[in-house]
Length: 159
Ligand code: DQA
Image (cartoon, rainbow, N blue to C red; front, top):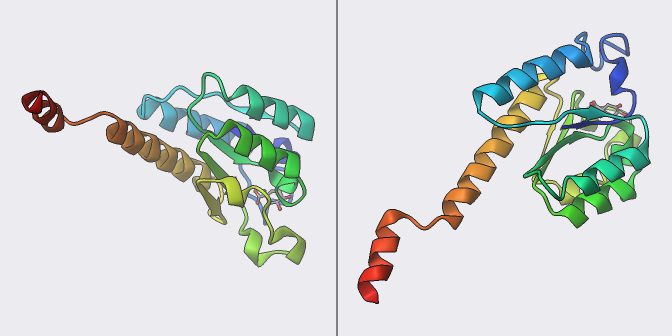
């Protein structure tokens, strides 16, 4: 999970728009859900676009998916979009606030076009929903790749 710029200030920053919870408290609830789902996770926050790009690139080996709140870089960063497209991992974009209800410059997301999905406006619950959604997506993909016992029997019978 990647948190973009200024999200380290959650809990003190524009609480009526974002939330009153700290990033630490959001991350703790999120890690608990990951434990319940038996998913191994890594959480990072950066105020720097380049650092986020480097982490996205690195996620290409050893990770199965990305959950990201790119914060203000959502609306400006083609580099973050390109990095997500390059690694090709299923990515869920999360926003605490409903970006469509806010200033026009927040309506466009460069990331949305390369994301599996976007969750916007549900506050901290959005991160939990993103993890559940990504987990379900990856489980469904694994099932598709693994032939069922019936189709394995069918194949060996036709040999
Ligand atoms: C945000 C929305 C962005 O427009 C803003 O720049 C942020 C946070 C959100 O979570 O609602 O920093 O991504």
